[in-house]
Length: 223
Image 1 (cartoon, rainbow, N blue to C red):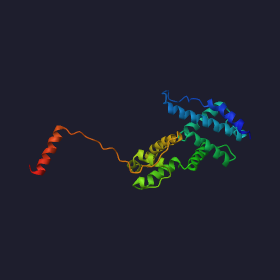
Image 2 (image 1 turned 180 degrees about the horizontal axis):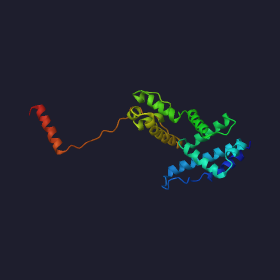
Image 3 (image 1 turned 45 degrees about the vertical axis):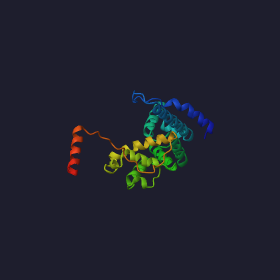
Image 4 (image 1 turned 180 degrees about the vertical axis):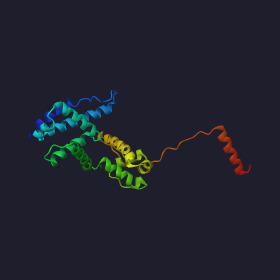
């Protein structure tokens, strides 16, 4: 096994290898999205560098062609894009420590989900189940992490309880992934002290509405 300096050097050398997918939309993303994607690219290149060092023969047997390796990396990038970069690196470490074989994509996803659990965050599916099963009032319940509550709240509790998992889960997981990204950027979340209520909607009365209301008031007061 190569030393850590060699692993680091190889990882840095691999950073540009994924590049942009030919199927990527030409519409430029915002600076935050670009930064997030670049961090994921760098993390994934480091992961494959570690795999190459630790599973040398298996690695070259699985990925004998450089162009094929780039395509595999793009596939992994899409499949792991809901996980923060540091979770992907922790997932790779977990995969390396728990198996003598080159991890598959499915195993890597499982390892990333375990890395979330190790950080006190449930996997996307576990978070969805938690949000659906907590009784009302939601805010009075004990949550594994505040972002699970916020992701459920953003979906709308009525929506979660009145739609099938096939419909509701992708919506929830999208909100959950956004909160994970915000956690990665250093944001901290705490449950609000009181259940948040929607802002009151003020409706301006027309002249006819005011006249009708005045007449009702007169009728009630027998004026």
